[in-house]
Image 1 (cartoon, rainbow, N blue to C red):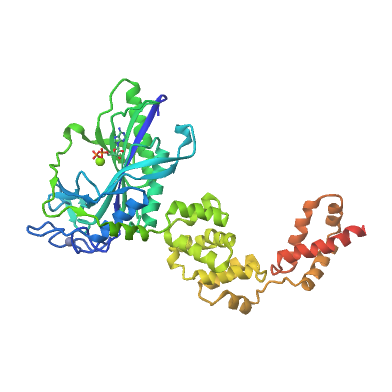
Image 2 (image 1 turned 45 degrees about the vertical axis):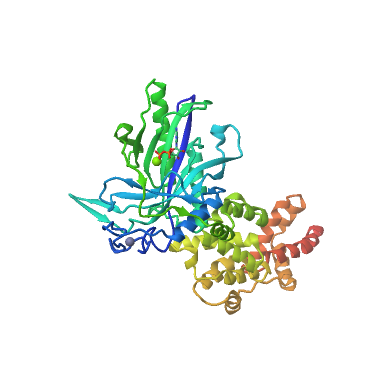
Length: 488
Ligand code: ADP
Ligand code: MG
Ligand code: ZN
Protein backbone atom coordinates (compact mmCIF):
# COMPACT_ATOMS: atom_id res chain seq x y z
CA UNK A 1 0.00 0.00 0.00
CA UNK A 2 1.11 3.54 -0.68
CA UNK A 3 1.87 5.49 2.53
CA UNK A 4 -0.93 7.61 3.99
CA UNK A 5 -3.70 5.21 3.07
CA UNK A 6 -5.67 2.74 5.13
CA UNK A 7 -7.47 -0.36 3.89
CA UNK A 8 -11.07 -1.17 4.82
CA UNK A 9 -12.20 -4.75 4.27
CA UNK A 10 -15.49 -6.59 4.72
CA UNK A 11 -15.89 -10.26 3.81
CA UNK A 12 -18.90 -12.17 2.59
CA UNK A 13 -18.58 -15.89 3.20
CA UNK A 14 -20.81 -18.58 1.76
CA UNK A 15 -20.91 -21.60 3.99
CA UNK A 16 -22.48 -24.80 2.69
CA UNK A 17 -24.49 -26.28 5.52
CA UNK A 18 -24.08 -29.91 6.51
CA UNK A 19 -27.69 -30.99 6.23
CA UNK A 20 -28.82 -34.40 5.03
CA UNK A 21 -31.07 -32.88 2.37
CA UNK A 22 -31.28 -29.68 0.31
CA UNK A 23 -32.83 -26.42 1.51
CA UNK A 24 -36.25 -26.76 -0.12
CA UNK A 25 -36.56 -30.38 -1.25
CA UNK A 26 -35.75 -33.92 -0.13
CA UNK A 27 -32.78 -34.43 -2.49
CA UNK A 28 -29.57 -35.48 -0.77
CA UNK A 29 -27.05 -32.74 -0.04
CA UNK A 30 -23.86 -34.51 -1.10
CA UNK A 31 -20.72 -33.77 -3.05
CA UNK A 32 -19.28 -35.90 -5.82
CA UNK A 33 -22.37 -37.90 -6.91
CA UNK A 34 -22.82 -38.57 -10.66
CA UNK A 35 -23.91 -35.31 -12.38
CA UNK A 36 -27.63 -34.50 -12.10
CA UNK A 37 -28.34 -37.59 -10.02
CA UNK A 38 -29.44 -35.60 -6.97
CA UNK A 39 -32.31 -33.62 -8.45
CA UNK A 40 -36.10 -33.45 -8.33
CA UNK A 41 -38.85 -31.21 -9.73
CA UNK A 42 -38.29 -28.66 -6.92
CA UNK A 43 -34.56 -28.11 -7.41
CA UNK A 44 -34.90 -28.44 -11.19
CA UNK A 45 -37.43 -25.59 -11.06
CA UNK A 46 -40.18 -27.51 -12.84
CA UNK A 47 -43.51 -25.64 -13.01
CA UNK A 48 -45.84 -26.31 -10.11
CA UNK A 49 -43.18 -27.74 -7.78
CA UNK A 50 -43.29 -26.11 -4.35
CA UNK A 51 -40.44 -25.50 -1.91
CA UNK A 52 -40.59 -26.67 1.73
CA UNK A 53 -38.03 -25.19 4.14
CA UNK A 54 -35.54 -27.61 5.72
CA UNK A 55 -35.78 -27.33 9.53
CA UNK A 56 -32.26 -28.67 10.04
CA UNK A 57 -30.81 -25.83 7.93
CA UNK A 58 -32.66 -23.35 10.14
CA UNK A 59 -31.28 -25.01 13.30
CA UNK A 60 -27.74 -24.81 11.89
CA UNK A 61 -28.22 -21.10 11.12
CA UNK A 62 -29.48 -20.61 14.69
CA UNK A 63 -26.45 -22.44 16.08
CA UNK A 64 -24.20 -20.08 14.17
CA UNK A 65 -26.14 -17.01 15.31
CA UNK A 66 -26.03 -18.06 18.95
CA UNK A 67 -22.32 -18.88 18.75
CA UNK A 68 -21.46 -15.37 17.52
CA UNK A 69 -23.78 -13.63 19.96
CA UNK A 70 -26.16 -12.43 17.25
CA UNK A 71 -29.79 -11.51 17.58
CA UNK A 72 -32.09 -14.23 16.27
CA UNK A 73 -34.94 -12.63 14.37
CA UNK A 74 -38.26 -14.14 15.43
CA UNK A 75 -39.63 -13.58 11.93
CA UNK A 76 -37.56 -13.40 8.78
CA UNK A 77 -38.49 -13.61 5.13
CA UNK A 78 -37.53 -15.21 1.83
CA UNK A 79 -37.17 -13.36 -1.44
CA UNK A 80 -36.59 -14.20 -5.06
CA UNK A 81 -33.38 -12.84 -6.57
CA UNK A 82 -33.80 -13.06 -10.33
CA UNK A 83 -31.08 -13.56 -12.87
CA UNK A 84 -30.56 -15.69 -15.91
CA UNK A 85 -27.77 -18.22 -15.86
CA UNK A 86 -27.55 -21.82 -17.10
CA UNK A 87 -26.88 -23.22 -13.63
CA UNK A 88 -29.96 -21.52 -12.14
CA UNK A 89 -32.89 -23.61 -13.37
CA UNK A 90 -35.71 -21.56 -11.81
CA UNK A 91 -34.37 -18.28 -13.16
CA UNK A 92 -34.16 -17.01 -9.58
CA UNK A 93 -32.45 -17.84 -6.33
CA UNK A 94 -34.43 -18.03 -3.11
CA UNK A 95 -32.56 -16.00 -0.51
CA UNK A 96 -33.50 -14.10 2.61
CA UNK A 97 -35.00 -10.63 2.23
CA UNK A 98 -34.32 -7.45 4.18
CA UNK A 99 -34.67 -9.33 7.47
CA UNK A 100 -32.27 -12.28 7.86
CA UNK A 101 -32.65 -14.94 10.53
CA UNK A 102 -29.29 -13.97 12.09
CA UNK A 103 -28.68 -10.29 12.76
CA UNK A 104 -25.39 -8.86 14.08
CA UNK A 105 -22.93 -10.79 16.22
CA UNK A 106 -19.13 -10.61 16.21
CA UNK A 107 -15.88 -12.53 16.11
CA UNK A 108 -13.00 -11.68 18.44
CA UNK A 109 -9.71 -11.57 16.57
CA UNK A 110 -6.08 -10.73 17.22
CA UNK A 111 -5.52 -7.28 15.75
CA UNK A 112 -2.79 -6.64 13.19
CA UNK A 113 -0.29 -4.51 15.12
CA UNK A 114 1.32 -3.42 11.85
CA UNK A 115 -1.75 -1.37 10.93
CA UNK A 116 -3.53 -0.78 14.25
CA UNK A 117 -0.51 0.24 16.24
CA UNK A 118 -2.01 -1.47 19.26
CA UNK A 119 -2.06 -5.20 19.71
CA UNK A 120 -4.71 -7.22 21.49
CA UNK A 121 -8.08 -8.67 20.67
CA UNK A 122 -10.52 -6.62 18.64
CA UNK A 123 -14.13 -7.25 17.69
CA UNK A 124 -14.95 -7.83 14.04
CA UNK A 125 -18.70 -7.32 13.78
CA UNK A 126 -21.04 -9.25 11.57
CA UNK A 127 -23.89 -7.57 9.75
CA UNK A 128 -26.09 -10.62 9.26
CA UNK A 129 -26.16 -14.24 8.21
CA UNK A 130 -28.91 -15.39 5.91
CA UNK A 131 -30.13 -18.65 4.48
CA UNK A 132 -30.19 -19.11 0.73
CA UNK A 133 -29.98 -21.85 -1.86
CA UNK A 134 -26.86 -22.59 -3.87
CA UNK A 135 -26.88 -22.63 -7.66
CA UNK A 136 -25.76 -25.60 -9.77
CA UNK A 137 -22.38 -25.80 -11.43
CA UNK A 138 -21.60 -25.08 -15.01
CA UNK A 139 -18.51 -26.62 -16.50
CA UNK A 140 -16.85 -25.26 -19.59
CA UNK A 141 -15.46 -27.65 -22.17
CA UNK A 142 -14.12 -27.05 -25.66
CA UNK A 143 -17.04 -25.53 -27.49
CA UNK A 144 -19.33 -27.18 -24.97
CA UNK A 145 -20.87 -26.39 -21.67
CA UNK A 146 -22.25 -28.84 -19.15
CA UNK A 147 -24.54 -28.13 -16.26
CA UNK A 148 -24.62 -30.22 -13.09
CA UNK A 149 -27.58 -29.42 -10.87
CA UNK A 150 -26.64 -31.62 -7.89
CA UNK A 151 -25.61 -28.46 -6.03
CA UNK A 152 -28.75 -26.52 -7.02
CA UNK A 153 -30.77 -26.00 -3.85
CA UNK A 154 -28.01 -26.96 -1.40
CA UNK A 155 -28.37 -24.79 1.73
CA UNK A 156 -25.97 -21.90 2.16
CA UNK A 157 -25.49 -19.60 5.10
CA UNK A 158 -24.16 -16.31 3.74
CA UNK A 159 -22.26 -14.57 6.50
CA UNK A 160 -21.80 -10.87 5.83
CA UNK A 161 -19.04 -9.24 7.83
CA UNK A 162 -18.97 -5.53 8.69
CA UNK A 163 -16.16 -3.46 7.12
CA UNK A 164 -14.11 -3.78 10.32
CA UNK A 165 -10.95 -5.42 8.95
CA UNK A 166 -7.88 -3.29 8.19
CA UNK A 167 -5.35 -5.53 6.47
CA UNK A 168 -5.02 -8.76 4.46
CA UNK A 169 -3.65 -10.38 7.64
CA UNK A 170 -6.81 -9.47 9.56
CA UNK A 171 -8.97 -10.78 6.71
CA UNK A 172 -7.09 -14.05 6.79
CA UNK A 173 -7.42 -14.30 10.61
CA UNK A 174 -11.14 -13.59 10.30
CA UNK A 175 -11.55 -16.39 7.79
CA UNK A 176 -9.59 -18.87 9.88
CA UNK A 177 -11.59 -18.14 13.02
CA UNK A 178 -14.87 -18.28 11.09
CA UNK A 179 -13.86 -21.49 9.33
CA UNK A 180 -12.92 -23.15 12.63
CA UNK A 181 -16.20 -22.00 14.18
CA UNK A 182 -18.50 -23.44 11.50
CA UNK A 183 -16.52 -26.68 11.34
CA UNK A 184 -16.53 -27.15 15.13
CA UNK A 185 -20.22 -26.28 15.29
CA UNK A 186 -20.66 -29.20 12.88
CA UNK A 187 -22.62 -27.06 10.42
CA UNK A 188 -20.05 -27.12 7.57
CA UNK A 189 -17.49 -29.67 6.42
CA UNK A 190 -15.11 -26.78 5.75
CA UNK A 191 -13.74 -28.29 2.54
CA UNK A 192 -12.34 -25.34 0.58
CA UNK A 193 -11.40 -27.35 -2.52
CA UNK A 194 -14.94 -28.65 -2.83
CA UNK A 195 -16.36 -25.15 -2.36
CA UNK A 196 -17.99 -25.71 1.02
CA UNK A 197 -16.53 -22.43 2.33
CA UNK A 198 -16.27 -19.61 -0.24
CA UNK A 199 -15.24 -16.02 0.19
CA UNK A 200 -15.89 -12.74 -1.62
CA UNK A 201 -13.81 -9.85 -0.37
CA UNK A 202 -14.89 -6.20 -0.39
CA UNK A 203 -12.08 -3.70 -0.11
CA UNK A 204 -11.64 0.03 -0.27
CA UNK A 205 -8.92 2.46 0.68
CA UNK A 206 -9.21 5.75 2.58
CA UNK A 207 -6.82 8.36 3.95
CA UNK A 208 -5.28 6.92 7.13
CA UNK A 209 -7.13 8.07 10.22
CA UNK A 210 -10.27 9.24 8.39
CA UNK A 211 -13.72 7.96 9.28
CA UNK A 212 -15.56 7.82 5.96
CA UNK A 213 -15.39 4.97 3.47
CA UNK A 214 -13.81 4.95 0.05
CA UNK A 215 -15.33 3.33 -3.02
CA UNK A 216 -15.28 -0.43 -2.65
CA UNK A 217 -14.36 -3.19 -5.03
CA UNK A 218 -15.67 -6.71 -4.62
CA UNK A 219 -13.20 -9.49 -5.45
CA UNK A 220 -14.71 -12.86 -6.35
CA UNK A 221 -13.32 -16.34 -6.79
CA UNK A 222 -11.18 -16.57 -3.67
CA UNK A 223 -11.03 -20.23 -2.76
CA UNK A 224 -8.07 -20.30 -0.40
CA UNK A 225 -6.98 -18.20 2.57
CA UNK A 226 -3.73 -17.48 0.77
CA UNK A 227 -5.55 -16.16 -2.30
CA UNK A 228 -7.64 -13.86 -0.10
CA UNK A 229 -4.48 -12.38 1.36
CA UNK A 230 -2.77 -12.04 -2.01
CA UNK A 231 -5.82 -10.62 -3.78
CA UNK A 232 -6.40 -8.05 -1.04
CA UNK A 233 -2.75 -6.98 -0.99
CA UNK A 234 -2.86 -6.55 -4.76
CA UNK A 235 -6.14 -4.57 -4.63
CA UNK A 236 -4.97 -2.31 -1.81
CA UNK A 237 -1.82 -1.55 -3.81
CA UNK A 238 -3.78 -0.91 -6.99
CA UNK A 239 -6.34 1.33 -5.32
CA UNK A 240 -3.88 3.38 -3.28
CA UNK A 241 -1.72 3.92 -6.38
CA UNK A 242 -4.74 5.17 -8.33
CA UNK A 243 -5.68 7.53 -5.50
CA UNK A 244 -2.11 8.81 -5.20
CA UNK A 245 -2.23 9.73 -8.86
CA UNK A 246 -5.42 11.68 -8.25
CA UNK A 247 -7.49 9.10 -10.11
CA UNK A 248 -10.64 7.47 -8.82
CA UNK A 249 -11.41 3.90 -7.88
CA UNK A 250 -14.47 2.70 -9.71
CA UNK A 251 -17.01 0.56 -7.93
CA UNK A 252 -16.88 -2.81 -9.62
CA UNK A 253 -16.63 -6.53 -9.25
CA UNK A 254 -13.20 -7.95 -10.00
CA UNK A 255 -12.00 -11.51 -10.37
CA UNK A 256 -8.82 -12.93 -8.85
CA UNK A 257 -6.44 -14.52 -11.31
CA UNK A 258 -4.11 -16.82 -9.38
CA UNK A 259 -1.91 -17.38 -12.43
CA UNK A 260 -0.90 -13.71 -12.68
CA UNK A 261 -1.49 -12.72 -9.07
CA UNK A 262 -3.73 -9.85 -10.16
CA UNK A 263 -7.40 -8.90 -10.13
CA UNK A 264 -9.28 -8.08 -13.31
CA UNK A 265 -12.48 -6.14 -13.84
CA UNK A 266 -15.52 -8.34 -14.40
CA UNK A 267 -18.48 -6.05 -14.00
CA UNK A 268 -18.75 -2.31 -13.37
CA UNK A 269 -21.39 -0.61 -11.27
CA UNK A 270 -23.08 0.77 -14.38
CA UNK A 271 -23.54 -2.78 -15.62
CA UNK A 272 -24.75 -3.94 -12.19
CA UNK A 273 -27.62 -6.38 -12.34
CA UNK A 274 -31.12 -5.48 -11.35
CA UNK A 275 -32.24 -8.58 -9.51
CA UNK A 276 -35.89 -7.48 -9.26
CA UNK A 277 -36.17 -8.73 -5.71
CA UNK A 278 -39.63 -9.60 -4.47
CA UNK A 279 -41.00 -11.71 -1.61
CA UNK A 280 -41.17 -15.43 -2.35
CA UNK A 281 -44.89 -16.20 -2.66
CA UNK A 282 -44.43 -19.95 -2.19
CA UNK A 283 -42.82 -19.73 1.27
CA UNK A 284 -44.37 -18.31 4.41
CA UNK A 285 -42.19 -16.08 6.62
CA UNK A 286 -39.76 -18.06 8.76
CA UNK A 287 -40.99 -17.94 12.36
CA UNK A 288 -38.49 -19.12 14.94
CA UNK A 289 -39.92 -20.69 18.06
CA UNK A 290 -38.10 -19.50 21.24
CA UNK A 291 -38.16 -23.10 22.50
CA UNK A 292 -36.23 -24.14 19.40
CA UNK A 293 -33.66 -21.39 20.02
CA UNK A 294 -33.28 -22.58 23.61
CA UNK A 295 -32.83 -26.17 22.45
CA UNK A 296 -30.15 -25.19 19.94
CA UNK A 297 -28.40 -23.09 22.58
CA UNK A 298 -28.42 -26.01 25.01
CA UNK A 299 -26.91 -28.25 22.34
CA UNK A 300 -24.01 -25.94 21.39
CA UNK A 301 -20.57 -27.52 21.84
CA UNK A 302 -17.73 -25.75 23.62
CA UNK A 303 -16.71 -23.03 21.16
CA UNK A 304 -13.35 -23.50 19.44
CA UNK A 305 -11.69 -20.31 20.69
CA UNK A 306 -12.61 -21.25 24.27
CA UNK A 307 -11.29 -24.74 23.68
CA UNK A 308 -7.97 -23.42 22.33
CA UNK A 309 -7.68 -21.31 25.44
CA UNK A 310 -8.49 -24.28 27.68
CA UNK A 311 -5.89 -26.45 25.94
CA UNK A 312 -3.27 -23.85 26.79
CA UNK A 313 -4.40 -23.26 30.37
CA UNK A 314 -5.30 -26.78 31.46
CA UNK A 315 -2.64 -28.71 29.56
CA UNK A 316 0.21 -26.22 29.49
CA UNK A 317 0.38 -26.08 25.70
CA UNK A 318 1.64 -23.24 23.55
CA UNK A 319 -0.85 -21.44 21.31
CA UNK A 320 0.69 -23.08 18.24
CA UNK A 321 0.33 -26.53 19.77
CA UNK A 322 -3.28 -25.85 20.75
CA UNK A 323 -4.08 -24.58 17.25
CA UNK A 324 -2.51 -27.63 15.63
CA UNK A 325 -4.44 -29.97 17.91
CA UNK A 326 -7.57 -28.08 16.86
CA UNK A 327 -6.98 -28.82 13.16
CA UNK A 328 -10.27 -30.75 13.11
CA UNK A 329 -12.94 -31.72 15.64
CA UNK A 330 -11.97 -35.39 15.45
CA UNK A 331 -8.27 -34.61 15.98
CA UNK A 332 -9.07 -32.44 19.01
CA UNK A 333 -11.46 -35.08 20.37
CA UNK A 334 -8.81 -37.80 19.95
CA UNK A 335 -6.33 -35.67 21.87
CA UNK A 336 -8.79 -35.12 24.72
CA UNK A 337 -9.63 -38.82 24.88
CA UNK A 338 -5.91 -39.58 24.95
CA UNK A 339 -5.30 -37.16 27.83
CA UNK A 340 -8.26 -38.66 29.66
CA UNK A 341 -7.08 -42.23 29.20
CA UNK A 342 -3.36 -41.66 29.85
CA UNK A 343 -3.50 -38.91 32.46
CA UNK A 344 -0.53 -37.37 30.60
CA UNK A 345 -1.31 -34.11 28.78
CA UNK A 346 2.25 -33.25 27.74
CA UNK A 347 3.05 -36.71 26.43
CA UNK A 348 -0.34 -36.91 24.68
CA UNK A 349 0.31 -33.63 22.87
CA UNK A 350 3.81 -34.80 21.90
CA UNK A 351 2.47 -38.03 20.44
CA UNK A 352 -0.36 -36.28 18.55
CA UNK A 353 1.91 -33.59 17.11
CA UNK A 354 4.78 -36.01 16.52
CA UNK A 355 4.37 -39.67 15.59
CA UNK A 356 0.61 -39.65 15.04
CA UNK A 357 0.72 -36.63 12.70
CA UNK A 358 3.72 -38.05 10.87
CA UNK A 359 1.95 -41.33 10.18
CA UNK A 360 -1.27 -39.60 9.11
CA UNK A 361 0.66 -37.37 6.70
CA UNK A 362 2.69 -40.23 5.28
CA UNK A 363 -0.38 -42.35 4.67
CA UNK A 364 -2.73 -39.52 3.73
CA UNK A 365 -5.18 -40.50 6.45
CA UNK A 366 -7.52 -38.62 8.77
CA UNK A 367 -7.28 -39.29 12.50
CA UNK A 368 -10.53 -41.27 12.29
CA UNK A 369 -8.69 -43.73 10.02
CA UNK A 370 -5.68 -44.23 12.28
CA UNK A 371 -6.90 -47.65 13.36
CA UNK A 372 -5.61 -47.19 16.91
CA UNK A 373 -8.02 -46.06 19.62
CA UNK A 374 -6.96 -43.35 22.08
CA UNK A 375 -7.13 -45.95 24.88
CA UNK A 376 -4.63 -48.18 23.06
CA UNK A 377 -2.18 -45.34 22.51
CA UNK A 378 -2.67 -44.33 26.15
CA UNK A 379 -1.46 -47.80 27.13
CA UNK A 380 1.80 -47.08 25.32
CA UNK A 381 2.15 -43.64 26.92
CA UNK A 382 1.67 -45.16 30.38
CA UNK A 383 4.41 -47.74 29.82
CA UNK A 384 6.84 -44.95 28.92
CA UNK A 385 5.72 -42.87 31.87
CA UNK A 386 6.21 -45.80 34.27
CA UNK A 387 9.76 -46.16 33.05
CA UNK A 388 9.01 -49.60 31.65
CA UNK A 389 9.55 -48.73 27.99
CA UNK A 390 12.23 -46.47 26.51
CA UNK A 391 10.74 -43.66 24.43
CA UNK A 392 12.84 -44.61 21.39
CA UNK A 393 11.53 -48.17 21.38
CA UNK A 394 8.00 -46.85 21.96
CA UNK A 395 8.28 -44.71 18.82
CA UNK A 396 10.20 -47.04 16.60
CA UNK A 397 8.88 -50.45 17.53
CA UNK A 398 5.76 -50.46 19.65
CA UNK A 399 3.79 -47.68 17.92
CA UNK A 400 4.25 -49.22 14.43
CA UNK A 401 3.24 -52.58 15.93
CA UNK A 402 0.12 -50.99 17.42
CA UNK A 403 -0.70 -49.57 13.98
CA UNK A 404 -0.19 -53.02 12.47
CA UNK A 405 -2.78 -54.36 14.89
CA UNK A 406 -0.41 -56.53 16.92
CA UNK A 407 -2.41 -56.05 20.08
CA UNK A 408 -2.06 -53.96 23.22
CA UNK A 409 1.22 -52.15 23.90
CA UNK A 410 1.82 -54.23 27.01
CA UNK A 411 1.71 -57.49 25.02
CA UNK A 412 3.96 -56.14 22.25
CA UNK A 413 6.57 -55.08 24.80
CA UNK A 414 6.48 -58.47 26.51
CA UNK A 415 6.63 -60.44 23.25
CA UNK A 416 9.57 -58.50 21.89
CA UNK A 417 11.44 -58.28 25.16
CA UNK A 418 11.53 -54.50 25.08
CA UNK A 419 10.84 -53.95 28.75
CA UNK A 420 12.96 -51.08 29.95
CA UNK A 421 15.56 -51.75 32.59
CA UNK A 422 15.14 -49.40 35.53
CA UNK A 423 16.42 -51.79 38.18
CA UNK A 424 19.32 -50.04 39.94
CA UNK A 425 21.16 -53.35 40.42
CA UNK A 426 21.23 -53.86 36.65
CA UNK A 427 22.23 -50.29 35.83
CA UNK A 428 25.03 -49.76 38.35
CA UNK A 429 27.55 -52.19 36.78
CA UNK A 430 27.15 -50.49 33.41
CA UNK A 431 27.74 -47.09 34.98
CA UNK A 432 30.90 -48.34 36.65
CA UNK A 433 32.05 -49.88 33.39
CA UNK A 434 31.59 -46.59 31.48
CA UNK A 435 33.29 -44.50 34.19
CA UNK A 436 36.23 -46.88 34.24
CA UNK A 437 36.53 -46.68 30.46
CA UNK A 438 36.64 -42.85 30.44
CA UNK A 439 39.11 -41.63 33.07
CA UNK A 440 39.88 -38.59 30.88
CA UNK A 441 36.23 -37.47 30.96
CA UNK A 442 36.06 -38.02 34.72
CA UNK A 443 39.19 -35.86 35.08
CA UNK A 444 37.64 -33.05 33.04
CA UNK A 445 34.45 -33.14 35.13
CA UNK A 446 36.59 -32.94 38.23
CA UNK A 447 38.18 -29.85 36.67
CA UNK A 448 34.74 -28.25 36.41
CA UNK A 449 33.43 -29.27 32.98
CA UNK A 450 30.08 -30.37 34.41
CA UNK A 451 28.50 -30.52 30.97
CA UNK A 452 30.41 -33.70 30.12
CA UNK A 453 28.12 -35.55 32.52
CA UNK A 454 25.59 -35.75 29.65
CA UNK A 455 28.16 -37.59 27.56
CA UNK A 456 28.51 -40.22 30.27
CA UNK A 457 24.73 -40.68 30.47
CA UNK A 458 24.67 -41.22 26.72
CA UNK A 459 27.45 -43.81 26.93
CA UNK A 460 25.63 -45.73 29.65
CA UNK A 461 22.36 -45.72 27.67
CA UNK A 462 24.27 -47.00 24.67
CA UNK A 463 25.94 -49.71 26.71
CA UNK A 464 22.45 -50.79 27.80
CA UNK A 465 21.35 -51.28 24.20
CA UNK A 466 18.77 -48.48 24.46
CA UNK A 467 16.76 -50.36 27.07
CA UNK A 468 17.86 -48.51 30.20
CA UNK A 469 15.58 -46.03 31.93
CA UNK A 470 17.32 -42.62 31.59
CA UNK A 471 16.00 -41.57 34.99
CA UNK A 472 17.53 -44.63 36.61
CA UNK A 473 20.81 -44.00 34.80
CA UNK A 474 20.92 -40.43 36.08
CA UNK A 475 20.26 -41.58 39.63
CA UNK A 476 22.95 -44.26 39.42
CA UNK A 477 25.44 -41.75 38.03
CA UNK A 478 24.61 -39.34 40.87
CA UNK A 479 25.48 -42.09 43.32
CA UNK A 480 28.55 -43.53 41.64
CA UNK A 481 30.30 -40.57 39.97
CA UNK A 482 31.45 -39.01 43.30
CA UNK A 483 33.39 -42.23 44.07
CA UNK A 484 35.33 -41.85 40.82
CA UNK A 485 35.81 -38.10 41.30
CA UNK A 486 37.27 -38.74 44.76
CA UNK A 487 39.77 -41.31 43.46
CA UNK A 488 42.06 -39.13 41.30
P1 ADP B 1 -23.86 -6.06 -1.43
O1 ADP B 1 -25.16 -6.70 -1.08
O2 ADP B 1 -23.88 -5.26 -2.65
O3 ADP B 1 -22.75 -7.05 -1.48
P2 ADP B 1 -23.53 -4.98 1.28
O4 ADP B 1 -23.95 -3.64 1.78
O5 ADP B 1 -24.30 -6.14 1.79
O6 ADP B 1 -23.55 -4.95 -0.29
O7 ADP B 1 -22.01 -5.14 1.67
C1 ADP B 1 -21.32 -6.26 1.38
C2 ADP B 1 -19.96 -6.27 2.03
O8 ADP B 1 -19.19 -5.13 1.69
C3 ADP B 1 -19.98 -6.32 3.55
O9 ADP B 1 -19.15 -7.41 3.93
C4 ADP B 1 -19.38 -5.02 3.98
O10 ADP B 1 -18.59 -5.15 5.14
C5 ADP B 1 -18.52 -4.64 2.82
N1 ADP B 1 -18.34 -3.19 2.62
C6 ADP B 1 -19.30 -2.26 2.55
N2 ADP B 1 -18.76 -1.07 2.31
C7 ADP B 1 -17.42 -1.24 2.21
C8 ADP B 1 -16.32 -0.36 1.96
N3 ADP B 1 -16.47 0.93 1.72
N4 ADP B 1 -15.09 -0.91 1.93
C9 ADP B 1 -14.91 -2.22 2.12
N5 ADP B 1 -15.91 -3.07 2.36
C10 ADP B 1 -17.15 -2.59 2.41
MG1 MG C 1 -22.10 -8.79 -2.15
ZN1 ZN D 1 -34.51 -31.66 -5.28
